[in-house]
Image (cartoon, rainbow, N blue to C red; front, side, top):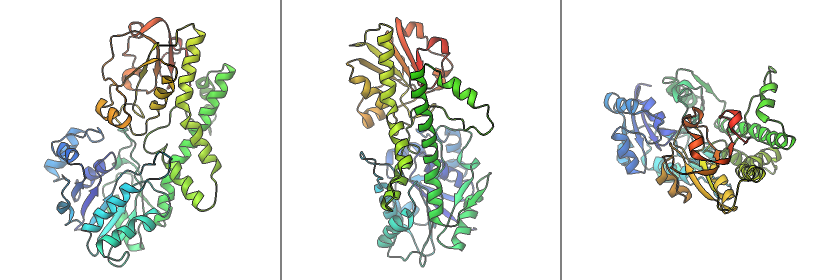
Length: 424
């Protein structure tokens, strides 16, 4: 514990907060392939907004945190933490390419006696069966003889300033009992809420992948209820409020399920199950339900327009919010894009307004244009897709924004009920 030198590989939503936290106790280097990202961080600003400028600058100035894209800067480290994305491809198959690349990086710099810990979300077995053989091949070292490994799944919730990395309970694990204890102590030394040491790396991997799969299934159930209650003319939120008075009722709200975790992790678990010869019916049914909610919102909005006699063809519709969740700039796997594409089929003119999202990032990732400032225009319909603070606090003048005969569809049920025409 006296000579731990940490390298965090991948400085995104997960890696940067972790590197910043580790730097308060240990010599820490954050490594990322993107030089523009590294340069921005060393200038004291995190574009993801996960680490405040004040905290980042303090870590650099007072704790010696170094962010670098130079491999030589992490050669002297002995405790490597891999925190790269684990996405799915267009067919929803797990894409381990970033993990393979990060493992090659580790293999180039790891030395005898060193430890590598993976944080990326995977299905059970990936760390030992997929990643560590890459480290062995590149380094020429033998796993559990020359170097050791562990798995400690990330639990970063983008935009959440309450459950920050230092305040969560962290699952840890190691490839030997002694290494498991070392890894647990290293993480525990910077956490205020302690750790849970899992019995094996595979158990830790499995625990992570079911956390978000459970939420995905629960939200899918409520989304299905929303569809049923809409057909019955019943307000879903009223039903949930009433049912929530029972002590053991699990309160979930309907909505779009995007982002890098809840909408992705179930596919990792599903593929793992299918490899074992089991077809995970509930998991995949939940995914199908949640992946279809964007098109459902678009269809419901158009139906409401028709019922109110609002012209649909060539009408102007504004989608308010594009990020995958409120009050953060993260647009990874946002399902608002499904609303956009479904509306396009009706030959309408669509404006996407989001005060948080980067128009350049959205254009690069999704090929559409969005605006950060509310346009001076009149719209026939507004879809409140994300519960941003600006929308929740009613900073929008809907009388000025919308035509006299209009439709407001509130996906997140954040506006006063009397001004909306429909909601999930």
